[in-house]
Image 1 (tube, rainbow over the protein chains, first blue to last red):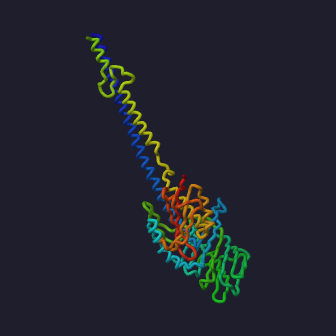
Image 2: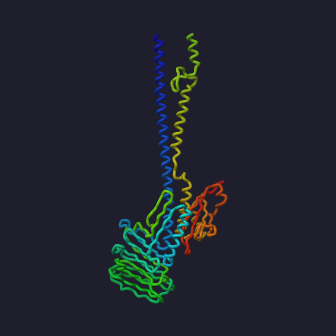
Image 3: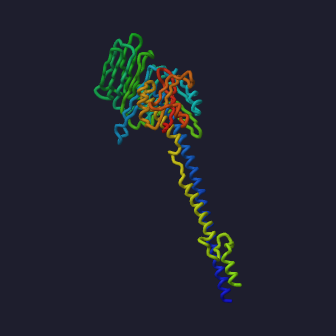
Length: 282
Length: 161
């Protein structure tokens, strides 16, 4: 009797052990399966984020491409020369030999072809004058007919201590009339280069009044204005009565906090799930 | 009779439930243990195979080719290289031996009649490689000599035979 009882107890214990171990094993496998499912989910999220990164990268490429095209008209270069004071050496090169009006009207059409090839949706708008806006409120304006460029602070007086102005002409001048140089103020360097002619003039000007430097040609003239220009203090303007005297104008100055820099041309690009709607960066 | 019963019991395979221990010891290992082991190995290896197959940016290989092409075009435009075979080759050489490239210049429109120039990276064979490897194409606009143009670069991996 006792033996039979013991045998029955052993059987029961074995059965209990088996039951507990089976359930434990099943629970373990369930955890492993759930873990694998979670990992699969995370994997899919990572794949999606990589694909989004690819699209963003492509969008950035389109914006960079269009910005490079506009740089043929007005090119802006900047080099930081004082980190602590956030000062930059700015150079703006205006290509006066390109007819900006026909450039833009052809460009709108050309961009439509580009959009069709790449599968992007591109909408571009431009204005007269073409303006480059700096973060510190400095503004470079270039009229599309090529008759005038202005570099000024749009909300008052520029803090530039000086300007370097380089002018390249297509036509020989007859004579020129300098402005009245001052003992102190804003320091101006003028570098003129033309067919078989060149000169350099340097000195201070009184930046609170309008100063005019006039270069006369057989027909028309080129004027360099400095000081109180277009309602702004310590500004620069170069204008020409006929749009073919000058091939390029280059202005260089040291200014603070210039970044970011944008053209006033509007750009709206959609590519797959990404979109950019703002001005074109310079 | 009891001895006979015991012998019969020893010869029978355990049939009492899936994972219950048999009342008899198995020949070498019990079937339950074998099944349990197999299942464990299966589930653990499945989990590991999922965990180890995380996608990396590099596995999206077409992206690499596109970026190389885009960077090359960007550099060519910045250095005004599009019209010069030697300048284009100089940039081609900087992309590495495994990369093949073909640059095409189109005047105003992307049509066969507007194709102006073709530059192929030295050492690359366009037709042969493109039959077996996939290529990526990148477009760029640029302004030269008073008109707008397309630069189209095809990028693919060099066939290693």
